[in-house]
Length: 414
Ligand SMILES: *[C@@H]1O[C@H](CO)[C@@H](O)[C@H](O)[C@H]1NC(C)=O
Ligand SMILES: *[C@@H]1O[C@H](CO)[C@@H](O)[C@H](O)[C@H]1NC(C)=O
Ligand SMILES: *[C@@H]1O[C@H](CO)[C@@H](O)[C@H](O)[C@H]1NC(C)=O
Image 1 (tube, rainbow, N blue to C red):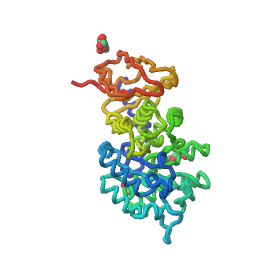
Image 2: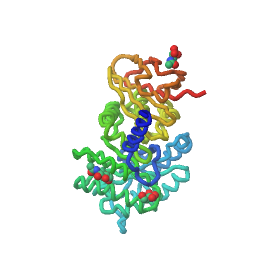
Image 3: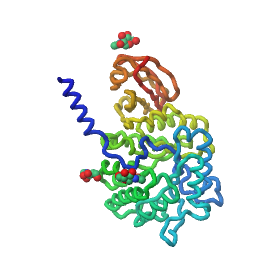
Image 4: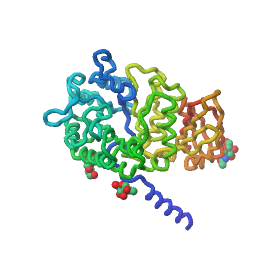
């Protein structure tokens, strides 16, 4: 009897706590994966002096070539995304957006055709306000026209920024209006928002039920930089707000902690492992911003690690969270489908060598995997099978400073 009541109660709790309705476009059932130019290439429009790195159609065609030929696409990295600074300074005579004619001589439709011919998808950027963050024409007043233009060009994802608006009501209405405008086009376009970030910046807590209802992913926190301090503050913001943001995530809509900067200049190998591990456990979109034409082997194999990607893309779509923080070790846990779990142990210490940690599985809330017996596999920093364990098992291992160890725990089956 008690068991039955407990069962009904937990079922009710499940209904109450299940994520609210996602944006009804059937997209982003797992976190979006791809590449976006911003963190690495910024607003470099100088194609005269820096033709290889300027924001031009060449850049996206080259990234698409590599994503299709060097294994990225097969692993799920399928969106090639344009950020700010692609636009001409004015709309055309019919008030439509147009790309900068010098840097995009073939136009965006041709670029989309090219990207599609590689089996990939094209993302583009606009802004909810008067101007984009870099000062190009914004979408305010033109949401329907712009959505239609994007659909006609064959765009597959819109990153919609939130600079240059008059007040928060206008911003929120703008994000909702653009969501509806995209829907009206009838085209499948992933809608990536920054509405919560600007709402928090305005001193208010965003309505995540509404955000999830209108967006496929949403930025909450500051732009990412190519540095360990930026990665740390992004991780800490997510952990410190997890009670608010984690319930909003699930198939169709995701918290977006911004781009993966692995493969650039600012992170050590251990810090790159940490970004990959925490982004996977947070069910974050995996959007790289790096130069795929020139990336070191270590970064490439980390970004292409199929075990980590499998955690990120797990079908249950439950965002993980920090379950403990002590002795400068942060422990994160994510529930996965098939009664499995992912765990990350992050060593916050920035002095000394590898530090040892010992945990008992029973203390980590992995009963549904390990009640009988489970199999533990280390998937980062290297792949190692740790074998069959039970709840009383003590796991003892070392974690490098600023690095992470990521484990996958699954029920044992013969
Ligand atoms: C538009 O919204 C309707 C109703 O929510 C939904 O059924 C439909 O799939 C959406 N279409 C697109 C293209 O997002
Ligand atoms: C949040 O948005 C939802 C859906 O749009 C709405 O039903 C709810 O009343 C809003 N909550 C608050 C506190 O405004
Ligand atoms: C768990 O594993 C240990 C060591 O292999 C073993 O001694 C112990 O009996 C097991 N406990 C249970 C409950 O199976």
